[in-house]
Length: 545
Image 1 (cartoon, rainbow, N blue to C red):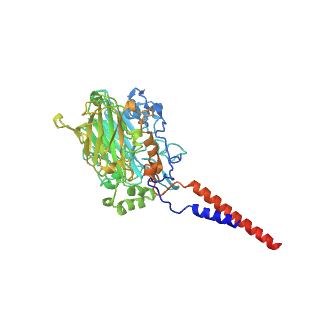
Image 2 (cartoon, rainbow, N blue to C red):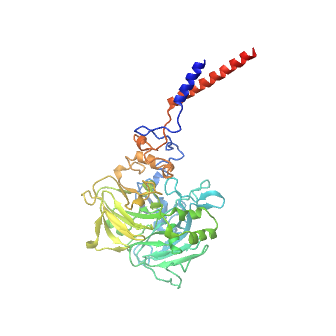
Image 3 (cartoon, rainbow, N blue to C red):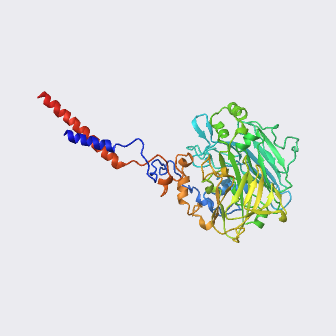
């Protein structure tokens, strides 16, 4: 018996698992990986409103097809084109727009479209702290699990700020970026800022033709010395004579408010007969009702809006509710000269969410108009794979044909805008042929999300046959499974933690246990302990006898 016990102890000692295990030449397979947990993984496309993708006519308004995963609400587009006062109540009720968010009246030049445009904007907070508990309210994800604090201009809305009573998610009207605004050359435009926020703001119409004061002699330039305080409103008056791609932003504490998201693209379209332009393009991206002038020269039109976020600045509104604390921390403690850009967005999202609503969908032999604006703090170097595009305008100024430059990298300074003509003619210059061609900022940080890549403002120029029925790119299943995962951007998951190369490129030091060794150790140790107990009991019994 003692011999058996000694043998079992020897076996147990030999097979006892070590605290550290030496790896072979090929590292052992990773153990920790939550990519299979449904809590962390999302569907690449929720496919919530497939009916919105279809070309359709609403209240006499023609709305083009939108093949992307998350198309704009076509009812929002109908109101953005005709105004809330010129559509049916049934159409308006399918939106979150207020009845006075956009009104259009008076065909002053008799060319078949309204020329007096009244726009009302509010300021919304996304991912801010709630006084009711330790959670964020009006949540808006820029990427899986990423919710930086943001401020955005929004069209005046009705109803709840949330999707429904059981949700903390902001309704689709409240999102980044601030909406692209379109008006026609020569329109009389009245833009009213109804400040529903807790800090003062203004609207500065950057590059847009406007007088310094209104007809009544009030401020019309939106500078810091004329802030619109909480609960107040102010109307800016313009009648732009020059067409082009312009800009607008808050000019109160410009560095902070601008980087919090209070900026947007402002486009003045060429005056044409019967030209009902799409006044709001919520979230930027595809323009589903291009202007008359654009339709004459282009088959499609897209707005591409680049932004960045400093997570230290964004977090200020997530750690306090008191406006005095927020103002103190943002203006006196936070130092913009020591800031960083951590999140890079295209049309309000970072990759992979850019695949849902920032994809450019093309066919062969198209001419596509791109309006590009840089609202980042840093330079954007836009590169389109497989194509070379032509710059037709800088900062809203059309360039003579002889001065238009064709290239595949476009340097765009902060607040600068470019108009591009993108041709998909497969001739080796304009296009290399159909594909799923990536386009992105070639400044290396631009394709990262808080340092994780792929992320940032990466998106795809997709030829339509290479998209599935939900508007997602084909042949990308492995990548989509990896990046539509909160753990990936929380840095809890190895970049190559799945697949054949996981043993070589997965987590270092986290190894699969040697189950045979553990079983043998457990059996040997258990039997040895059992026999020792048995011997002790037998010995004790003999002592009693």
